[in-house]
Image (cartoon, rainbow, N blue to C red; front, side, top):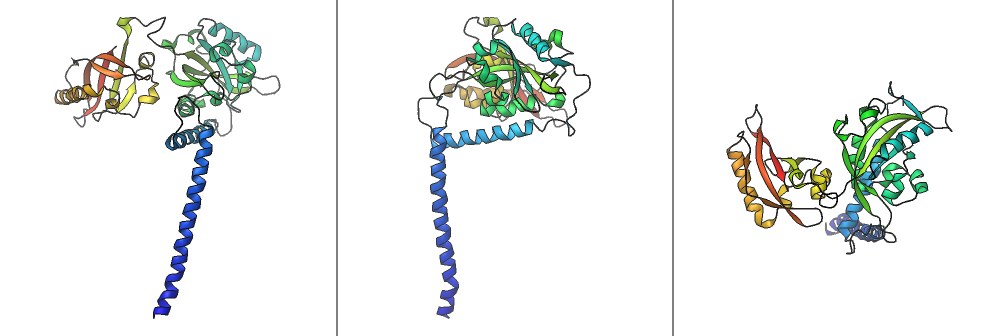
Length: 349
């Protein structure tokens, strides 16, 4: 019986040893991969990247690749362009770009193909704004210029089927408040500050659909024309006037951001996608968090009442400093459940 039991257990022991060796080998290989990834980590801060930083960066790169693949699958199955889209030649495209980019020194026009993703045309202002050569821009895919964490946002707002026609809005395209689609924000890569160091700056983007006839092809390509405006700090010249440093936010009763007014970008330094899904308490000064809890209790207690003022709170900006927000608070009550769906804050810096 002992002999029979021994023979039954022996294979299990060998299997266990084999699994343990495999785990050790996989662990060693994983650490080698992590060390290799650290070499390609963008050095945006002086400290060396940790293992977690390297893994998070790798995950963002994977998301960037996935979003890039999804982006080129947005076309209709037959690849047919939508009716009513005007076709432009490269010469006409250059004229259109120069007309709209020359009105603002912080704005440039970039046109990329939905089929290849490559830039078909980029206005002259892009080279100085992004601090790079035009040859580099013209040989790049537009998504390659974006920060990895912003690629999904870019693809979500430039879906082929949802874009307005450029020819229908040419007269109003430079007036962002009349744009038929909501603008969005992405970080775009500029010139290198130091060797092997990439620098990303925030830009406001509005996309439009058009067709461009490239001389080397018979059929015109469906393209996306983007108006790209650099976002500057609201506290540097030209400063945003004190009475206009206002933005709004909405968050859940559990303090999770649902929506961020785009006016907050110049005042707080965060892009909307940086804050969405995060807790508002993470940005409130530690000494003011109890005050924020008291605000929530009052909002929930007087749900549906007119907005009320509250004591100022300190809010952390993207660079680590704090601004003081004078806020008024209100809530939206779901008429069916009679519960607070979200809380609205109107803030003045």
